[in-house]
Image 1 (tube, rainbow, N blue to C red):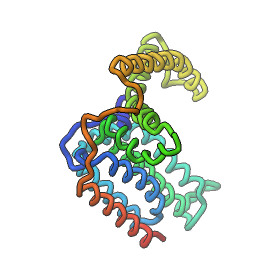
Image 2 (image 1 turned 45 degrees about the vertical axis):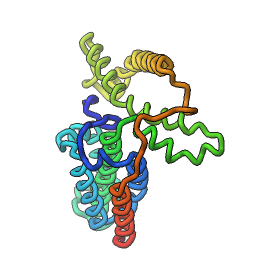
Image 3 (image 1 turned 135 degrees about the horizontal axis):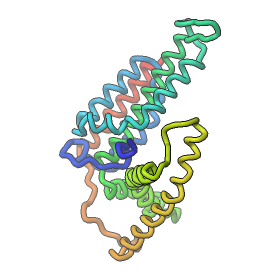
Image 4 (image 1 turned 90 degrees about the vertical axis):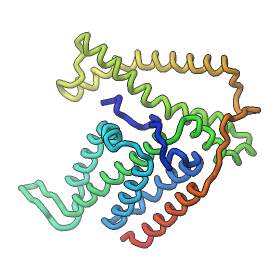
Length: 265
């Protein structure tokens, strides 16, 4: 299941979303993280779902691939939804059995929170699925360029962010391998009380940290061997180009924001 996490992975394809400038995709992704909290009724959530569906269709990423990537977080989404259903006491009573009550407001709020989490994961995942780590680094560096006036290490920060995103699936795959190796030696991660399961995961940390530091050292040596010396004087193989499709995408996002403001309760 850990191998199915799609955050940080790149899916090669020839789609309008892949051809967009990385700066426009970064702006749109960060902007979407804020406007998704404007939705508070069925109409506004319907608009967000429609916009997300069109974006997924434009990315040409298979739905089966996205569904496999959502599996690891479905437990969190369902748990969050049930938590709101059972604890929120608003609206009419839909079900009552003794002290146990389910309210209409709790059901609606649970569904809305679940949809919000799924939409956030989908849109942030599409950013990495349609943008290479190098393009993410260049896009972040361009967007944060004005901060260089205050002597901030913009290039190093952008590189650190892109490497972190890239190594998320790698670390999850390494965790999966260590878990299988320990299960072959008798470790049990699936049965027993929750406390015992949590203790069983502790032995994973030491080999995972050792493997992470080893990979970091290998990456640093490889970058030094190729002449990497930071952002000063660095050249790029491909220059970022802003096209009409990038402007059109941001205009659509602004229209979506205005619609959410007008239609929210």
